[in-house]
Length: 278
Ligand code: C2E
Ligand code: MG
Ligand code: MG
Ligand code: MG
Image 1 (cartoon, rainbow, N blue to C red):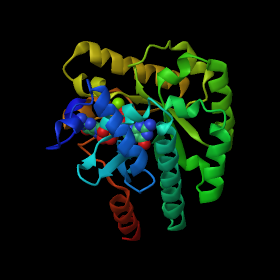
Image 2: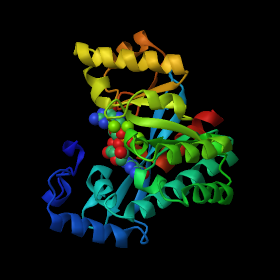
Image 3: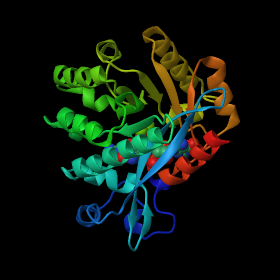
C-alpha cells in the first residue's frame, strides 16, 4: 500500500505506515487549510461489465498540494480519519460526486458513481439528513449513487447502522461492502443489511490465478453473492489472466488498471460524452 504513495515526493508523503506524530500533525494542519482553499480533486476509475461496457465508476479523492504535487489518499485519508477532518473531506467528495452525476444526467449520461464513506462519517447522527440534502440540492438521482462502506462499520452498533442504511436505500441509494473479505465480521450480517454489492479486495483478485487459497476465497465470495443475489465488483484487476480467472468463475464487474486507471473526473466525463455522441 505504501508503494502507491508519493512518486518522487519527500519522505513525508511516501510512507503511509509509520508516520511520526509530527508528520501526521503537519498533514492534518495542511489538509484542514487546503480543503477550503480548493485543493482536493476528484478522480474517477471506471468499472466494466464482462462485455466491456462501462457500468459505473468509483470516486477516488486526491490532494493537489501546492508544493508537493498530487498526493494519493493512502497518505492523508488515514490521518483525516483520526478526527472530524474526515467529515469535511467526505462532505467535499459527496458534493462533488453528486454534482458530477447531476451534470452527466443533464447531458444524457446515466453516470453511476461509487463513493467511499468513512465509518466515522456514517456514524454521525446527521449523516442521513445531510446526504438527503446533498441529493436535493444537486438534483442527483439517488439510484445513481453507491455508498462504499467497510466491514468495520458494521461490527459495532449494528442495529443503528442497519436502520440508517435501510432509510437511505429506501431513497434509492445503493450500498457496497468495500475490501470484502479483509475484515473480521461474520457472514451472518450480510443477510440483515440492505446491500447490493460486494467488492472483492485487490489482494485476493491479484493472487487468485496462482494461489489456491485466494482462488478458493474468490470462489466463495462469488457463491455467497449468488446466494444473496448481490452484484460483485473486483478491484485491482491488472492482468488479462486475472480477468479471465474471474470471468470463468462468475459474473463480475471489473475495476483495475487493465481497463482504466483513476483519472480526473472531467477527463472521463468528456470522453464518455464524446462516446455517447458518436
Ligand atoms: P479503495 O476504496 O479500496 O479503492 C481502491 C484502490 O485501488 C484505489 O486506490 C485505486 O486507485 C486502486 N486500484 C484500482 N485498480 C488498481 C489496480 O489495478 N492495481 C492497483 N495496484 N491498485 C488499483 P487509491 O485511489 O489510492 O485509494 C486508496 C484508498 O483510499 C481507497 O481504497 C479508499 O479506502 C481511500 N479513499 C479514496 N478516496 C476516498 C474518499 O473520497 N473518501 C474516503 N473516506 N476514502 C477514500
Ligand atoms: Mg472503495
Ligand atoms: Mg476497495
Ligand atoms: Mg481495497
